[in-house]
Length: 399
Image (cartoon, rainbow, N blue to C red; front, side, top):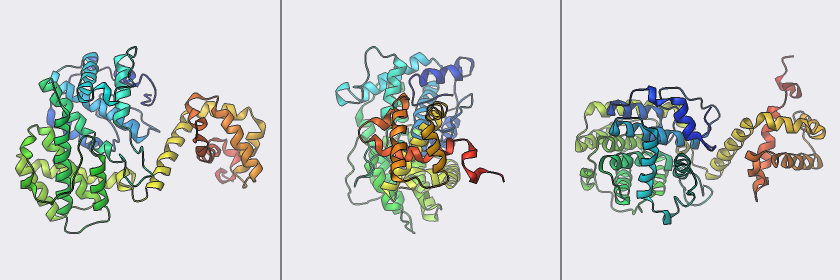
């Protein structure tokens, strides 16, 4: 199983997929539409377009985003280069990001000369998909950033085609997307509680441009001629359609907006119809899990996000954690009792102290011993009884 949060995941991905025995991707339209179905375009990937299925049980959204970004960029590489040379692909990925961000910018500062190319790329991708850095703040942070990750793919495609890229391209691309989404939301006859917040999330999630509110205007005021590649045009239609589906329905005025947008981009009506259906089906099925449709309470979102991450850490360290716990008879006794009654203050303190000691012995749980990490202990303790033998919990008994 691949672990996108651990060193060496890119090499393992290529090893397991064994692309050398596969045919390169040749159908550009089919690849794009297959990618749309995965959810990557809206920042919530559910699976990957790969020759061999990837086990993803327990993965976080950021881990999905890491592999989705790598895999989609590799797909574009195959389309442009007509080969599957992973070493060359990794080399060109790093060159691409170095063109976008000089080392003085901070993005590549963590890369050390002794690191392997794949390790360097792992660090870059980790930086690209970071989200919710300041979620408990008046700003909406980067909760939508992973919905705009496909811009990296668009820029990489340009880089492969022309051998160069600049931040100007990404700035213009972001500006066109945010302005188009604003107009798309304004086209709604019936406004929902999500619309204003969704627009703010788009505006706060841009990486390269500063969005200034101006007079709304119309599609005619946006220079769509800047988009010359099919993927740019397709993505703009899909992301505009996604923003309209925030209320789980598509009005006639919204469909007309997408048709007008497609006409200005010289994209077929058939593509728009397929986009509306597939985007609608995906969002209807996954809306309750997609972060930016559940952002009304940033504090709750932060707690839910943290809880999921802690739960993932526990499940991945289950065997060693249970081994360490089993060696402490007093801790085992207290945890068993906690499934049947409320522990008193002294007992809770003992549990916390002993679990903190255990965390120190498991490297991946060292997050709990950094300054402020002890605040996560109640979440850790909350999940530990679920890992204990079922005999400790009478609610799981069949009698």
